[in-house]
Amino acid sequence: QQPMIKLNNGISIPQLGLGVFQTQEGDETVNAVRWALQAGYRHIDTAKVYGNESSVGKGIAQSGIPRRDVFVTTKLWNEDIRSGRTRQAFEESLDRLNTDYIDLYLIHWPTEGWQKAWEDMEELYQDRRVRAIGVCNFEQHHLDELHALSSLKPAVNQIESSPIFVNQALIDYCQGELRTDVEVWSPLGGSGTHLLSNAELTAIGNKYGKSPAQVVIRWQLQRGVIVIPKSIHQDRIVQNLDVCDFELTEEQMMTISAMDTGQRVGADPDNFDF
Ligand code: A2P
Image (cartoon, rainbow, N blue to C red; front, side):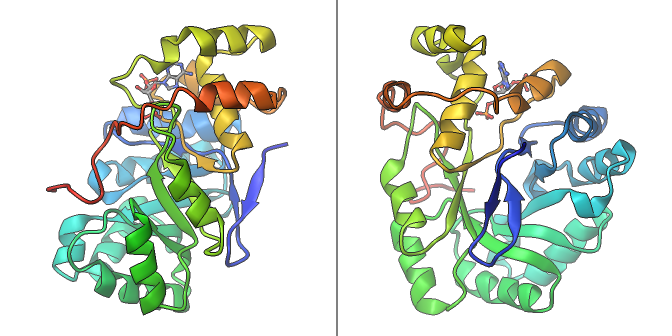
């Protein structure tokens, strides 16, 4: 029932996962992960910098779902990239997550030193410590540089994309020749926007008995991207997975895409200072 995507190295990833950005270490994250897995999610997306890897590990353990049945993503943080600590940072993430492998390991931002970090991540991949490697927040020029440097194509590029900031040209570029799958962050427009009270989304949702959030998640799935909505509330976590029993029309897809403001909600990959 749950849609899967086959990455460019042949491994499968559930197209819908739980994101835990800004989910607090401790019960908040443990519960969100446990509720998600018990509701049927099999994909959790965290990062070292979120500060909640230990709780993600605990949530998986408490869910009763075997580790091997869960697709776990984490990310190499910028200070570790800049200081060339890829290997150590990776081992530290494994310890916190209480696991001995990562399904998908991502460079979090294209900060100084990412080229060396990619080499180190290739080694982790060759050594079978990670099932796939990829990047986040790479613009086309970063991808071109990576492509010139390495024959191993990133399995994934995780970027900002929502009806507010559709980012379609970059998605087309990734999904084209590179065969790099796109994961979208802030898929619901993030926490500071009013997207989910948009009247058009509400009207579309009413036709199917779905909420605006479910409509947006459905729009993301039909675009062929991997989507990782965040929530700390059990009812919303459950609701966000319940998007496989309706289909948006071409016209509805276009209506949603036309909400694009061209304005990012998050940081600019060509101009950030963290
Ligand atoms: P909360 O964690 O309090 O549920 P994004 O994934 O784009 O970053 O957006 C997530 C934001 O949307 C969070 O603030 C989250 O808040 C909220 N959210 C997630 N799912 C739903 C939902 N089904 N309905 C309403 N708000 C939601």
